[in-house]
Amino acid sequence: MVAGIIIGIIVGVLLIVFWILYNGLVRRRNQVKNSWAQIDVQLKRRHDLIPNLMETVKGYMKHERETMEAVTKARNLAQQLSSAGAGERAKAEGELSSALSRLLAVVENYPDLKANQNFLALQEELTSTENKISFSRQFYNDSVLRYNNQTQMVPSNIVASMTGFKASEFFEVTVAAEREAPKVSFTQ
Amino acid sequence: MGMGALLILIGYFLGLYFFDSAIAGLVIAILVWAVLSLVGYFQGDSILLTMSRAKKIKRDDHPRLYNVVEEMKIASGLEKMPNIYIIDDPALNAFATGRDPNRASVAITSGLLQKLNRDELQGVIAHEISHIKNRDVLLMAMCSILLGTIVILAWYGSRFLIFGSMTGSRRSSSSGGGGGAQIIILVVALVFMILAPIVAQLIYFAISRKREYLADASAALYTRYPEGLASALEKLGTSTGQLKSANKATAPMYIINPFRKKGMKASDLSSTHPPISERIRILRAMAGASFNDYDQAYRQVHRGGTGVIPAASIAAGTVPIATVKLEGGAGEPNEIQRARETSDVMWRLSNYNTITCDCGAKLRVPPKFKEPRIKCPHCGRTHQV
Image (cartoon, rainbow over all chains, first blue to last red; front, side, top):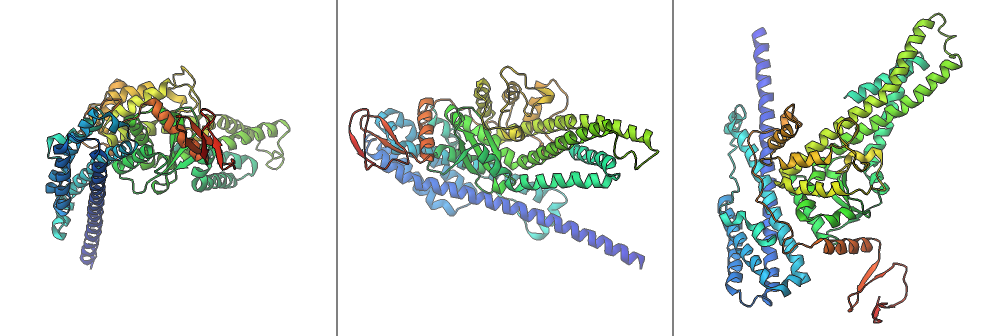
């Protein structure tokens, strides 16, 4: 009788612990998903801004065809890969960032363009989108770190392996030039 | 909560003295506190924003400010975009309000908006968003209400006690022989009434300063760029203008103490904010951008001693600071442009119509202006309104 009660209590406690750990894992995984969606929104926003930008600079930058084409190409490639995994996508978006920063670096040579209100508004949007991408990536990576820690550390790793929680992939900056993007492009 | 205990003690003594029962006093103290708390909880943000005559802006009114707030919202992982307000005041300050992170607002004075470049603005907004994220708004509101209740009760309590003892307490007849005990209770209660508000104030200031350090640390973490906030604080520190609409209860929510006097070493016990120079030194001493780095920088500035970040928040390791940014970028408006931009926003928010004349003059048409045409006073061209 007494042994039965003790076993019952132990099982009850174990169930409660399992329940808490499981819910914790779900919360973390949802946070990772949410923050990934946030990056997604910002990357899409950048894809949408680029045609506008091209339209605005076209009239001014007659001698920069190659730079402009590189941006358009990188943008189209990044858009095609928008349903790929984090690693592959980060690479394509990195290429786009560096192409974009090369384009915005040559704006310096076009004073007329720099005085264009439309362009200035676009540039503010691009700066901000660029920042938002890096901030959402920062938050995403922090969430992934917390989630992965929980899937790998005792005791929650037991629950994680039992119920199939897998570690998530970081969104790493793969292109060296991308790291410098905001600096080169807007604050020279 | 030290202050809660103080409040309860005051209630206890008041009750003991006036009603012969400590419980009655406690009930009154808690009732007063509850009413004030409820008002503060549900109306605090709108009272504060109305008092400071803040004007709510939309994305199109000031895209840069809106974007910076959104960036910090993303960096902090806040779920909802806070409302953004501008206060038309040349003083340099900013504050956050709202009882929970989903109902938050940030407000900034037009003076500050003109003065800061993008990185600095980001630092200031990050500081305010940290107050929201760390739920400091609610904490400090509750603390200041508690403090207010203690001050009110102690004030009335001590008046009644003095008055009562001089005219021969009406209560001495009812409890007859306990005269000696009565006097002891009276003396203890009086001393307590005098000390309680002072102690409560000091506790309040200590909590407030601690939350300021934490908000600075979070701002550095969110922006990964402590220098932005440091250089904003430097600009804030040189200004002497006082905010017209601030009051004591709302002081801890501002980025710098709105009541700071010129040349005051606003340090130590009697201020809601740590001295600006110290906050700048800590931020500039940071080797990385994590809480850990902030804590170490704090210890370095204070020559050892205990840190300021709650131990639970400190994760091991450091976070690198973002690549160094340079001031005065190509696309960034300078101070004159920012001043024009801000004044345009302020006119528009007051329902003035702005017409730009070909000669370069800007006509501000007041909302009461009914004529269909207006003549430029500078060059004489007529414009449709």
